[in-house]
Image 1 (cartoon, one colour):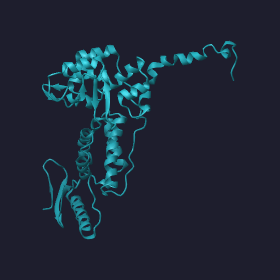
Image 2 (spheres, rainbow, N blue to C red):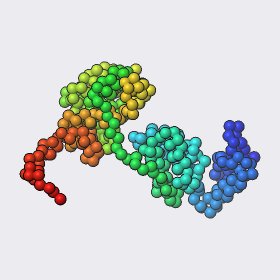
Image 3 (cartoon, one colour):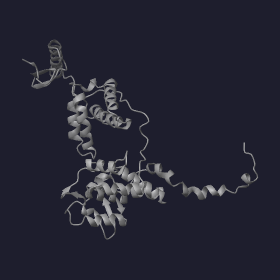
Image 4 (cartoon, rainbow, N blue to C red):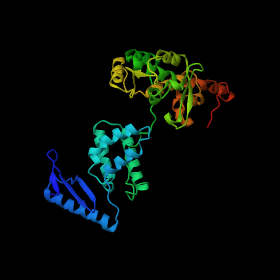
Length: 340
């Protein structure tokens, strides 16, 4: 019997082999007659593939699995896997050529119902688009890309930061291992992955310097960060705790910063809408407020373009006061002349 039902599913499943090609999949049909029609169509597709050399229709599941295997070098690989785990039960019944704008909008509506932001939805669309694009250009599984919808107004750069008083409250509430990492981030502006994976071989206490290799840099280029006294104090507190990694928890390498302990500490400190990466925004904001130039900030933070740091420019308008005052005594104003 080539079609059958599983106890925990309302759908009929088909299972057959033609020309050495084995097929075992859901028909997405709850009626036996419709399931039989689906199976007949699939058998014909396989015959066309074997006898006529026609391109087989690939499933989303096949594409997602191949993407994971080929893209495991990405720094965002774990994030991709989390996204794909959510997408899999929603797209596993689709062939790649069945994924269209309507299907994608359905995913977006489900995300919005769960109070996800437009930016979160766009990141999901980016991953789906990247997989489908690879299926077209590299795997030749698909003839053309569908229209990938977007949520507008979601590309505004986040500017959330906290004051020194709020930071002190937060640090007091954090457990020791997260407190050390947060203090080091506020002192250096390093990204979470660079702090979590920081090794003693990257630290030079004599020259007060930390080196980040290109393989661990978001911009794929190595860079160095000078260590101020606050950073040095944190580093010295970690001496002797682990042979390889600077920051550890109970003798083990820390894999995640935004844990339940982090979220609970935020609640106790009375700080809302704040992510671990916002510690980097806080570091940058404090620098600009205290007079660090945007050029210096760009180099300290290893931003690729100057545009990335201009979001902090408004935090130190005092640096422009001297320039503004150059016209403070202009005769045009003194004589009360009317400008048309």
